[in-house]
Length: 312
Image (cartoon, helix red, strand yellow):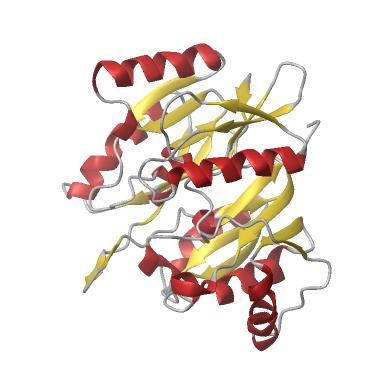
């Protein structure tokens, strides 16, 4: 069984609209509508949404000049607009069938309920489900060809060593490496400073030498260098901290959809760097304004779930 990289072909894109908190404070609805407008010609889109909230979501998209024609609604919703924390990790079996790995994410409230949602999602998609066997978080893993990077959070001590051995046995085609999260980032998610964009190619944030951020990401960069992977650097942005906001804006929390790159943007001159790199790789680039979204410690990658194409 091999893990499926996120630059692989995509069959369907899931989004989730929840007005309370996610939209009222951080304007998720507007971002979701922009994603739909950008991606609708590249992939089938389904919105997870409570029936009572469909009229409001239609209204938001109409205000943004976006059409929902052809977009499906699924009323079996997890009730949480961030999807990338608990939804399945995808792998391909020896026979080519896609399997979804499920787990409990103990960092979240309603962790058991969210795990059950992941199982229902796989059942609806007609995909095999396999329990990972230990607690985990979706974006604590990034894979590119033979290299699989793991956030070290769930792998401390003797129990962590057993978990790592279990993954190595399950996925013998990959080499697993434990790396730290980005210094100052409360999520510990690897997509806050790394983005696999093509076979053996990555985008990574770059911070001034000697800073805690530069030191924290060096172990991951060293692994990639040792495996001969190419890393393209983009500006690492300064933290945003006030009141209860504590977040690290970045350009690596993006999504690839069959030749389309949805790229975080902040209306800054630095936005151009990541867009140029992705265009050089042949992607059509659509910037998504994350100025408001990032205040919830989320980017484009956090609020979507891409389902890999079957039989590829």
